[in-house]
Length: 422
Image 1 (cartoon, rainbow, N blue to C red):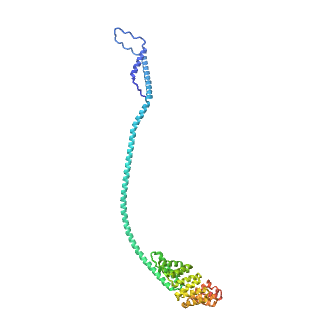
Image 2: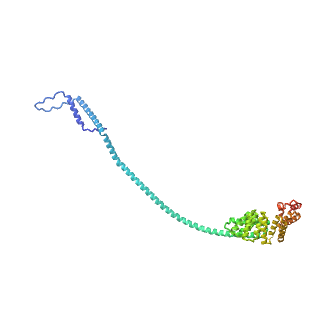
Image 3: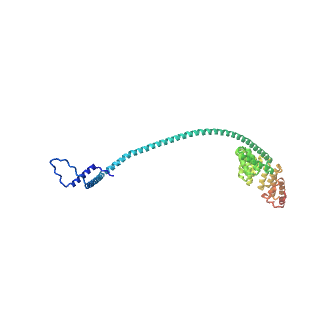
């Protein structure tokens, strides 16, 4: 509801209305004033019609006063509305500023408090974690230290037990190895210079070398000397296990480079393997270390013979004979080289010298038979073949494939010799 800013009271409005009504109803002139003052007459009573008129006038005046008030309000609003709005806004702003400032201050205070609480909590948590961590580390370290000490005691005991057991096993393995090598030496000595190995000895050599290999595999700490490898290589050689023999001989040489027996074993094994150039090189190493070693020269001649370098082989055999003239092997191999050069009389002479030294040499008789077969002396060849077969029966099997006996293989005498039952 609009407020009326004026100062006309309702009583004044009523009085003004009554005065106007009375002025309209009085048409007569006022009575003449008596010369002698009389008492004031009472006003005549107001009639009902007059009362209604007065009431209507009063209401009209009141309505007019309201209209005037409204007009005054409109004018005031038009004139002072923006000022009042501005004042209201200003009042609102003035009221809002303390409230906003208070809210901001409250928010800043709460934020600072939260930050302080968070920092305190974080600091307390870090300090607590650090303290717990230190306590745990101390407890764990103490416990671990005790466990480590206990573990070290157990390990020392286990190591002591293991070393004792290992030492016992090592001594047993060393003893087993020594026994095997000793038996190998005994068997190899029984063969002498013969390369033909009787089956029982061959089987035993196989068993002994297998034992050595097993000792190597399951007892890695066991030590093998150059001599041990040498004997193992010899056993492999006689067992025709040439690749393994080469490995053993090279192992011996790696330990003792000047071990002549290992070089000689390596040379003959390479020759048996068909590696003639390497065999010649191995024998030359023997000769380099011992220039007058007869077996180095013999081995070189043998490899050269296999390479069909007969003249070079003859020279090497001659040096071997000069170094040791009591070796039947040297004489018969030079005789065979002479036969390959078709110098049969000289070859027979050297073979006879070999038989004088070793009368039971089956190879000497065999190669004499070759000399006679090459000269078409069939009967002499058959006689010497029979002597060779009598001393070594397996020679009969060589006649079927040996190209040296091609000239007589199809003769009646040779066929009868080949068909003789074993």
